[in-house]
Image (cartoon, rainbow, N blue to C red; front, top):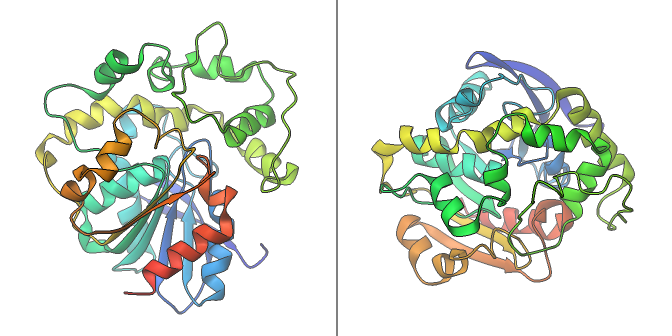
Length: 318
């Protein structure tokens, strides 16, 4: 880990923390999810760096050591994609290979939608491309389909989820999220709360250490969770702003990887979208879809070697 260099780079009106392993080979940009940080990609960074690639993993806006504007209105696709374009410009990079997970996957889709000229190829994990429905806002659709207790609906009210999470030790919150293997809909009634039972014992899997948990917990103890939750709170605003891109396809080469126990893969409609032609229609240069058996949502940490190999097997073609 000592070969990973850390810096702060001013981009798009904020200071962005960037972890990087320098190299003379092609650059690879990694985008993390929630509740994660650049650290989620440590294994893939080391793996690809050993093969000569230059690996770059920022803390996205609102996370870790990157600035966190307070308003959810400052977390639109245009803000976050703008941060990344600014980062590439600051690093002097015209094009990169792109790798995303969870919210980072959403950001990656939007980066490819808005600035395909900056991306050689994309390896995305967990979250499929979601074409814009011109008729109904996303949160309204989620409430209608999954109910008010659906976690994204519950995240909408500023301060509410933060208050629930604050009742439990931050390390416990991180463990609860990262170790979850329930592929069903994530619904959290208010009487249960996002933190769950404060003293419940969570056994860590072999791929997650107490040191890993403490790295995340230390950062989220300092920042809180509002920055990450603001991505969810900007979903409807994003829907409004992205209207001009309705029906636009993703026009970069893509490989998609998901675990069969991932809650996103098991969301109603997603399997049909992936396997019955919808995904290919909206992502015409989709070249590979990999379903990893017995793997849950935090795929890049649960199966670091396999995911690293999948990334390399795809980007080495270009």
